[in-house]
Image (cartoon, rainbow, N blue to C red; front, top):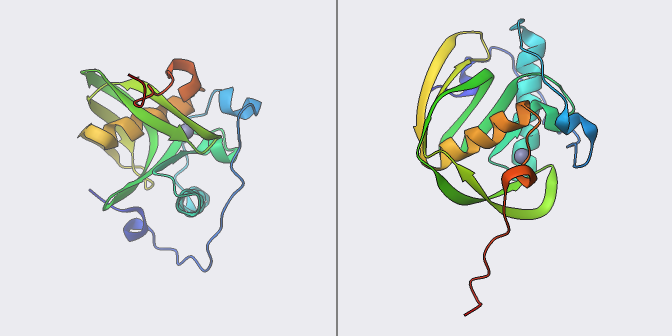
Amino acid sequence: MYTVPALIPIRKLAMTTLPVVTYPDPRLRLPTETVWEFDEALILMIMDMLDTMHNDRGVGLAAPQVGVLKKVIVVAYKRRQFALVNPEIVFAAGNELGEEGCLSIPKTRLMVPRATRIEVAAQTPNGKKIRLKERGYIARILQHEIDHLNGILIIDNGTPIPDDDRD
Ligand SMILES: [Zn+2]
């Protein structure tokens, strides 16, 4: 697995955080465009998305969440951090309910059904075609972020978290 900064020949001078678009902003529902140009502007946008995600303590962020209607996501979980361009789920198996939040829907946690194993076809920020096979929480994050690229939010298929205190 690669990490984004290692691939990037540009030295970023300052942290840049972008305003996060929140529900019900219509940009969260619009279709996103395929990325064709793997240029410096793309890399800088990805770095800004990473800064924004970390600043808000997120584990993933999709470009529409910062108002950019392009197929780009960033993920950071445990020791892995990466960006995917034009990601697409090409295989999915299993089903599991798990708790999720979303930086674009503050103060909301829901139980969302997700596949437990997925394979994603995507491109790196440099345009190289890759495939990732993931399971567990990273697979959940990827499904959440790829949903954003298709205008799908956790409120669409999430259900309230069961109240454990009740008998
Ligand atoms: Zn989200």
